[in-house]
Each structure stands twice: as C-alpha cells, then as structure tokens.
Length: 380
Image (cartoon, rainbow, N blue to C red; front, top):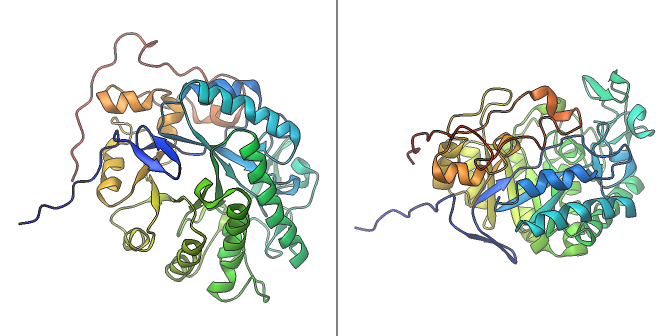
C-alpha cells in the first residue's frame, strides 16, 4: 500500500525563485499608515519590519505605483527617488536581521479621493465606490472616477513596471502585484465595476486582460522569478461583485501561468472550498494561502497554526498570516514552541500612526511573566 503524501511543516525550509526561506510562514501585506504624507516610509517602519524578520518571507504593505493610485492618507508609495531611499532603510534593516522582503504594488483605482491625492481617481468605468472614504480631513463621500482611456491604461501598466524596478533598487527581492481586495486590478475583473465595451471589458478574457498585461510588464521589467500575484476570488470588500467568479479565475490563472510569476497568493483561502481546490490543481507554481481567521475577532489561541496546517495539507506551499504577525514580532517562535499569543491591542491603533500598537508588542524574550504553552494543534 502506498502511503499518502505528508504535508510539509510550517517550520520546514522552502524555496521561492532564487530565495531560500527558513520556514513557510509569510508575513502578509498590511497597510499601517505610518508613511509620510508623500508616501515616503518613515524610519519607524524599519524597526517594525526588522522586528518581524524571522518570517520566511515578509510581503511589505501596499505601495502605490503612481500618485493617482493613492488610496488613503499616509500609505507608502514607490514612484519617486525619495520613496526608494525610504524603503531602502527598511530593506537594509530587515536584511541585517536575517529577513527577506517583497513589496506589494497597489493602485487604488476608484478607492481614492482628491482630498488625499489631489487627483480624481481612475477606474475601468465611471462607477463610484458605494461608501465614504477616509481622507486627511475625515470620511468623505466617494467621487465618481474617471473611466480610463486606452492611453491611460498603457501609462498605468508602464507605471507598474517602473515601480517594480524602483522596488528592486530599494533592495526588495521582488514585488507582489495586488489584484485583490477591490482595488484597480480587481475592479477590471469584476462585472459591477467594469462596464467597458472595448478589449478590456465584457467577456471574461477581456476583463482579465489588464491584470495579465500588468503582470507581464512587471515580469519583463524585473524577471518573473521576482514577481508574485495576489487574488481574492469572490471577495466583496470595497463594493466588488465579480458576478462570475468560477469563470474568471480559471481564465486568469491559465494566462498568468504563461507569464510564470514566482507565486500566486490567495486571500482568505478555505481548503474545503472547491474553488480553492481548483486553483491548487491549476496553479503549478508556488501557492501562498492566507487562512480565514475572522477579521475583527480575537486571534485564535494557537495564532492560526491549525488553520495554517490545514492549508498546507490541502496543497498550499506557504502560509500568509496578517494580524498574528502584527501583534507578535516573534510569531514563528511562538508557533513553533506553542507559546501564548499576543492579541491585537486595539484595532483602532492599526492605522493611527506612532509606535502604539505598532512597534511596542512584546516578544517572548521581553515579556513577563513567562508565557504559558498552548496545546499543539492537530493536522486533519
């Protein structure tokens, strides 16, 4: 009798392109609003990321590839020399602590506001965000975006490629193209935000075209081994309604597979869902999966280890965790030893700036009294 294959351990080394990862835990990209108003990373960000350098890979928070792509105040950018210099401080601090980093590239599309960027947002179609949006003066009604012309599409694709080159100049090992969470690339995929009748709208192959062209341009600029792509099948955040999720992603994955990026990153992955299982069958490269831990609810006592191991058993290669890394700089060691997990102190501190709820979480070495152990999770 042939034994069933054994899934790898979270703490087993892995390879990603030309990177050797010491473990399979990835720090997910999380916007923290600690940059300067112009998008330049502040020095405190170097401390924050260096504290978490034991992750197998850090995917740094969303950075905009151009000015019009800015979403919220004090988010990072990567389209000027100042941005490159600011990010280089971060990558050097992480490298000195033994870590490896990719940078997520995100264009907000309709998720933006003139009160923040000084520009009217661009989007596939003139469909506004059905909500208010945070600006430097507080929540404001969303504005109707400008429907992108073909020339603006080409310029935006070129901006992504330039941003990827800037990221490599800043010391990142690669970039993640953000095609999820209701931002520009996701807006092209979804029926309710893409009403175009040209080659970038209508049938699924046309709605996936912009994503594929962005990824191809980025891969041509820095090499496919340095590129990842993040997707969120079925996610409805930021007013997105894809309409035909089961048809979009097979077409998208087949096209992306021909480009050959280093990894695919699936948000809120559920190993029991047929769509996740189909993605694993279709995607022959490295698959990063982000488990569902319940946004806004307390972290599970095991820090997400059981959920992570379920995804490994379902075929994921690497596991991305967000809030567990936010609250636990030494998360890898806590999961490995079964130590107790820090809870997120205050979700309101996630986006307010400063050290509170950012660089002040204790490690096992600094916490007192000694943390109790939690039961080892069982792998199904």
